[in-house]
Length: 248
View 1 (cartoon, helix red, strand yellow):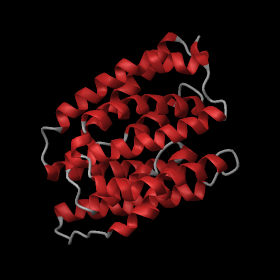
View 2 (view 1 turned 120 degrees about the vertical axis):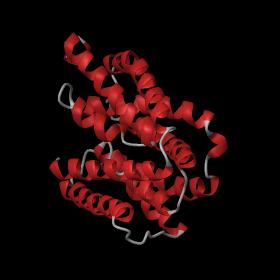
View 3 (view 1 turned 90 degrees about the vertical axis):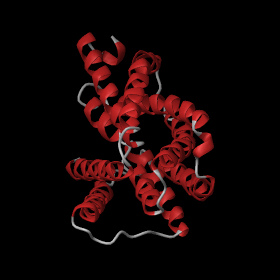
View 4 (view 1 turned 60 degrees about the vertical axis):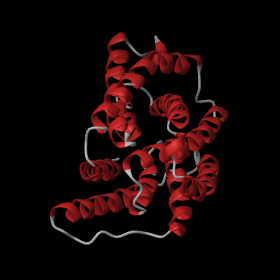
């Protein structure tokens, strides 16, 4: 069987992929946060990371072409170089470093920030912004952590763009193009490390329609919610991400 998977495990994997991309379609991020930890219960984690990376790559190619007109080009330019440098650093240390402390620190930061965003909406705390110079550390650190651990780091870019007051449609389009470039670089790195086998590619092909269906469903729901609701959804996803990183 594919990667030693039974038909039932493949069906479960399909449900996980569909649900993860529904969330991604609604919010613009979060597929890896949900999908990879759950897929790790039914397949080796390196297989889950490599296969999921291909699914995301196909999606981001489509979204980058479709939504190019609403991409925030200035923010994309600021984030692109540090993001690619972060991937290079992550690939170089992928097999050498297993720094769980880094994930826990990131998880704690995401929890604090998500609670702050919720407090802005429900308690009336003042809402802060950030300057463009934060693009460099956010892009580099996010790509480095994503490459090392298969996800989690991209939430730093999410926070950066949220604090830059990028709107919902522009946000989803901008991160799609940025993470397309990151994903291409990551896949080259994973491929060089030998994580792509014929079975991995076939499993990706089987799950590809479920990724497309989940993304379509999520976008239909996401387009119906207000900007304020979108911000609250983002905060809840960041809270979930932070909690999952602390529990890793």
